[in-house]
Length: 141
Image (cartoon, rainbow, N blue to C red; front, top):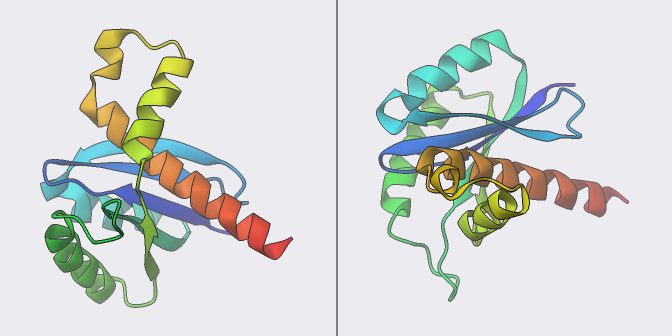
């Protein structure tokens, strides 16, 4: 099998998570400056077998898309153009930042570490990926 890669896209930096090849476990990979994201992804995909890319879909509580979608759509279109054979899809990312902070608290991270926005973005990407994999497993049961 191959990996699934998840992205928590931000204007300044982007959190990235990846599954193991069996698609059982989601792991935070890194956070990269968004202006370097495409180069990072293309390099990573040349080195690792990736089946699909998930991009966090920012929605508000009323189900309307948030402001960040105007940045995500051009990125997603470029990604699809550069990787035409790659499955790319949006995954609801509501509450991922809140869940990331809760995970950091539960993990006993110090306040200074919890204020690390790059770490929050990476954990958010991991939560996006984990929730996607769990929904697929539950759907197939």
